[in-house]
Length: 478
Image (cartoon, rainbow, N blue to C red):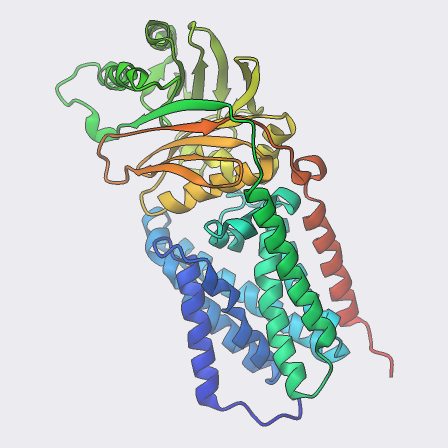
């Protein structure tokens, strides 16, 4: 295809295996390694420039499929088997089609600027899927970088999709540099751009991580108790569980906690008993002079509401938030979604409350950032295997929005993180055992460009991808 010698089949196999292992480690819900995804696409993209379209499709599909197999055990625990197959195969199919399109564009125009086709296409596809998917941003490659804090700071400028762009641009540039070098074509311009992007990204990230802040500490406490805590001998199991939680309030208050956050759906409240339970929490807040976030399932006739009560130290109900974004199981359980974000004033500061899956949706949580929230409290309930990932998806919203976050998840992670995405305190309760976590967090809003301009970068990439497709189908002038 290129005038170079044919690629040995052994090298092709090794390249696909290398790419697949790198993607497997990056997507793994237990490995948590950020760097392999920067290397994974290099052999696939390089081989694509030296192989036919059919071979390119086969290699791209096979390599990405190996990577996505890391999610199969988790998917099988939450989805029916047919959907596991659909989910596992759809990502490699989309990726292979993207590589095919990029290959044609690079070979057609032979210009180094075509390197941008791959990242803008990947970014645009992710963006459009986020707008339409019932799972929001779940599955984005940007989340693989959540431990690489200098790069994560890009989300404050562009949203998380700026990270998706980066982790696809750099390997595409390396692959094209190698290919052009072998053909004795100029690589200086592309090399300068690639190095410039890397240096600029790291400089911005390190600068933001080293910003000084006006310390305004809040001491928080969390306790998570799973269903194992239900007393079989108790006639009123909901009251028994409520009392179990409330017993920990005094203990946490004695440790200095001024805000106590409980997990999602602590127990179920019938509408006619709502006031009884609410008053219990109000009285406890007054007795220990603490604020609390209590999340309950409230039954209203033939449907339920997933609600979070935010109670001030004087017993005032500051917010009665209804979860907006539901997962499929909640819809089947007749849970009714809310419509508005949970934003309130506490101690003359703007704060917010959201519940679990709400944090998967960029545009929705962006409303908290635009409102100037200093901190968001997040009751949650994870599925054991996805505890780490789901907690880090929430952390990404902190970076985009410029606020701190306290998240308490049953069967997952209890986390306290700052506006840069640093996880300051963490505990794991995925074994169902009662878990307590306390710590200090600076609550101060840090305005971000993403707050102000929204999805400007994603929209720009979508336009650029349309231009790329137009150039692809346009006949080339002789």
